[in-house]
Image (cartoon, rainbow, N blue to C red; front, top):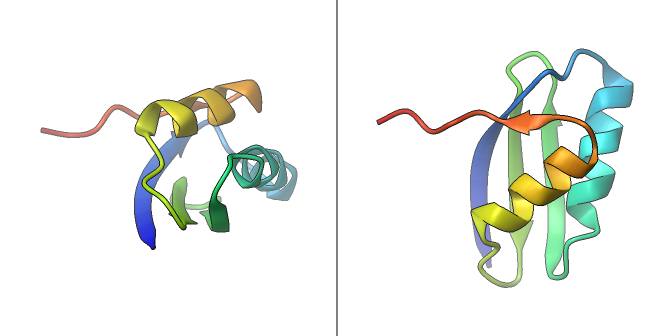
Amino acid sequence: MSTRAFTVEGMACGHCAEAVGAGLRAIAGVTRVAVDVDSGRIEVSADREVAAAEVRAAVEEAGYALAEPQP
């Protein structure tokens, strides 16, 4: 089991969270998605290692963007 956290830019409401969550749940192997609109934080749990590129593609397909990681 793998869990990774990301920050999404541009989410402002429950509809935003649902759109992002639905896209992430469509990724093969994803077992749980938690979305916090206020912080923009998402947590993705899966039964395999999910690549950041897969998460980025799903978030962008929903109309949002991943924040770049801080150094």
